[in-house]
Length: 191
Image (spheres, rainbow, N blue to C red):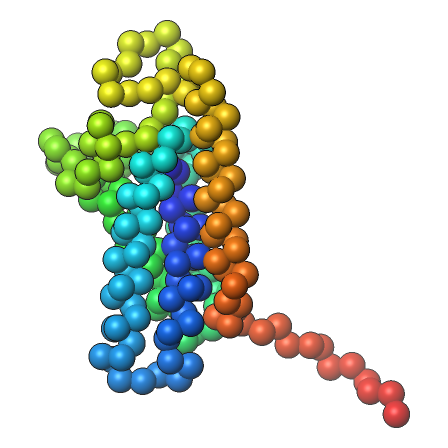
């Protein structure tokens, strides 16, 4: 899936994990008991989303910067107490793409020649493990690739994206504690 959807999922994971983060800074060990499993959940959420049948509605040149912008904005919207958690889960959710696909994307965008992996490390990026769907546009697809414009694949892709967004928003709404509270402007009180 696009990195933006991985980012949204990471925000949902971080809001659920925030329930177990002590309200006030505690020992590093106690905080790591929440942050490390949340990081792993971010990585695993990536695999879960990539396993779903999906197209790529956001262009690849816009997608990573937009996801990074969302993460920075999200960190600005949560209190300092939860920023590390949000950032670590976001990193976990995008780490598989950074490792397996990052150098190739950078090379394609900037014309660089960074070394790339010959075989992807994460199984959901392998041809048989991915739910990626691509528009055929008359090109011949690899045996394990599926076409976005075949059968109901477009509908399935849109439905899966809507499910991901809905579940992420529900997870975020289930714990709004991390959000900064907007202060009410000073207004004269009537007697």
